[in-house]
Image (cartoon, rainbow, N blue to C red; front, side, top):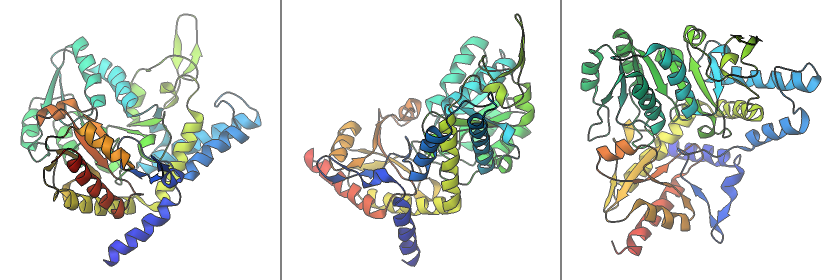
Length: 415
């Protein structure tokens, strides 16, 4: 009880930093936001940092020598350094700014993949992947002729590692998988899987869209070769994300897009690419968003990622126990101790979209659908689920409201 009380006090202080959490919807119904796996809310400090850029030193970067341009460039690169340090990168130059995790994975596929994968090669993925870590490899495989094989998901919602080790015996070139499932909440044993892949001679790409916001991450400790993530899921703005990769890989990879700032010298018939990471950042970037991303990192660091993880584990365990007692409700994925702050569920005889709509009328924002993971839903023979996802600003009392609202859904449908 003491630990829970302390956690509640921390969350109460955190909530004061998020203006949207004061909002009411549907005729004065207080907002309960359980959709952070789709996008997180933003603290006032992130909003202020982006407003400050536009108010005080709006200018393009890496080009001008006037005061505003130099200030903007410095803030942009300072943000890169803080974000790189947050994921444990030894060098800021190993972090490339992209629009999001999706673009980061596509960048790897269209540069490293196009240059290194060919007919007969093997790429290993998993059945729990987001479409962003399926479709880019499917597109390239159709063109280049390499094979895709998949680590199955067990009934419990875990990866079948016995099959994984069997696939590794086929000498894959790349293993790409999510560290944290956006549907099942499963936190995969990434370090163990990376070590096994490297022993088999494969490189590893980690989809960290869900892990970077919620658990401490060190790309060095993981041993990953590529790590991808998005700002908007970790208290930052939309439209910016990151690709981290080992320096030697980035240097060897060809440019992704052509244009300004990704070049050192251009001739009429040829060009010389810029140094990393700028080689992959063509054109005017999302400057305000990068600065906002840096402010989001500052906020997470001020709370502490160990604290973020602890708060989420506590509320997830509480929600899991409350929800599993609801008659007719089935939770996908593993037990609470094996998952992060995501609970996807079905209600017997009630479509997830109907569930989400009624919950919305109660002020509760959840996600309904296949969550950009259609093959995973096919694996469980269901078209869709309702997903409640938690973050550092959610409370157990909000979970209590969710449980009551789900019971109301059942009443509406006569269940």
